[in-house]
Image (tube, rainbow, N blue to C red):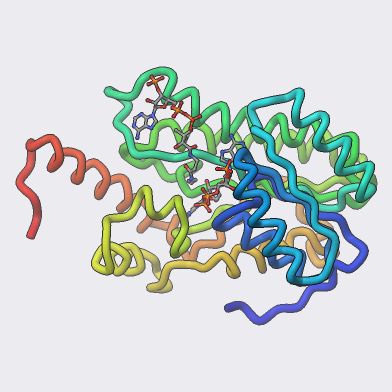
Length: 279
Ligand code: COA
Ligand code: NAP
């Protein structure tokens, strides 16, 4: 657990996709530091549970059930968040979908589902939050992934979508800089106990150890590691950082991250009976 302290009292933080995993960890970090927090995701049950969990820190918490693919709904949600909380100081865009599938067997609709959630969804979150971002002083943090710059087998859809997210980071940083809005990408490494790792890593303690061993720092990350970096990026300590793509991954994207693709393609060959299972 990183030792750091940030004071976000008086700030408003909106976390799109903030009802589970890494993004809920980020929302927790900001709520604990005193921010008023709003979260959004598709499932009303997940939204309700996240709001309840975040209320434990004593601040204002709002929750919205919405799909980032639904532009009309996002327009309503951000208008309502602004009406209740005022200008948004930090926007975190982290809604995403992932599954393991080979490019030569995936349907166009499967590829499109991930592009629509991760890339178009991020664009729409930024686009419809933009009128309500604090100017100057607002900050956007897009949650990217090592797939944006480390090609991985069985991940063509995620690689394409997250690479797009990072270019969206850079172009909006260019367009919005003059208004005092900073835009950065935060790139988590393998984060323990998350839905993303459940979908990608080999099963069981052996699988978890294999992933940890592929990280130069020899451990998986925690949601608290990512929350600490998000709170840094949102703070005045990062006031001259914009357009950056920041890996928070114990050095994983320097080499070890590619292992996931090899494991996934090996598994699928085994499942298809083309390769005997490894002992
Ligand atoms: N392999 C291949 N194709 C898959 C798939 C898989 N494992 N899972 C879904 N698809 C395909 C579907 O078959 C469908 O294509 P088709 O119409 O040609 O059959 C397409 O993807 C869309 O599936 P659908 O279930 O309608 O999408 P959705 O919008 O309800 O859900 C997903 C989106 C598929 C990304 C879903 O996994 C999801 O909601 N994920 C969110 C949680 C998550 O992934 N967390 C980790 C974040 S890193
Ligand atoms: P997660 O728990 O599944 O988080 C995804 C969140 O997005 C959930 O709150 C989900 O809630 C929401 N969401 C999904 N589709 C949505 C949609 N169409 N509209 C609105 N909200 C939607 O996954 P995670 O593993 O913590 O991943 C979080 C982020 O970190 C993602 O951006 C992922 O790419 C990135 N990342 C993860 C890892 C990792 O190790 N896990 C590594 C690198 C990057 P609903 O189901 O209610 O919609």
